[in-house]
Image (cartoon, rainbow, N blue to C red; front, side, top):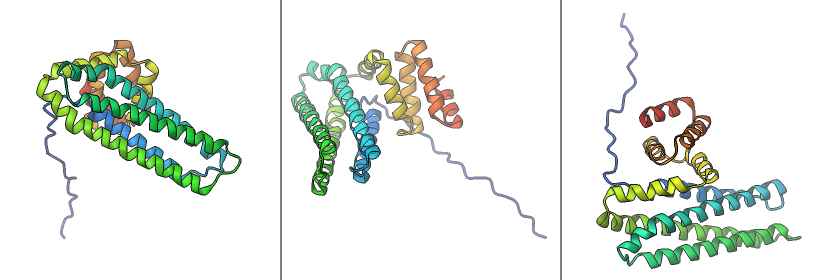
Length: 236
């Protein structure tokens, strides 16, 4: 009789090689892209005549506006001074983009308020609103791409990693507890394990011990046990 033996599950023996340079944009941009995508998807399936669904959409717009505003403010405070220091030709264009994108999103929020407060909701108006949101999504993603493909290489050419890490640490130390909790909670399910370890390692270095302890408690609540234990092993 032929014996049957179960084969061991194949293991991935590849080594993970982290980026050689510290990236100020990557993780936050991945999170922002995911949030904009989620809002666009929510808008596309919202019944504007349904009060519960329309309220959820309005809340989504409010939350995204807060995220994008704080992100732009952090870049203005902690990244743009580096560009000013080297007299970057990219800086005026990036700052102009920030202003344009903020105005476009505020216009979207105002349009949404008008739609939801209208006594008659026209299907064409809903369709046009959705298209405006998708246009904003495209413009914002182009902006993120510019920062990652144009600004990041310029930062790498002119600064060593310790300056970039210091800018990131200053941002983390000065972020409000409310914003830190909101970003952390939203980000946990949007990034991979290596990025999760990286951002928590940076938080541990930059934040007061008690504040970091609270972040770990939040992660433990939001992540399944195994991923959390896997992450915290690397952070510690």
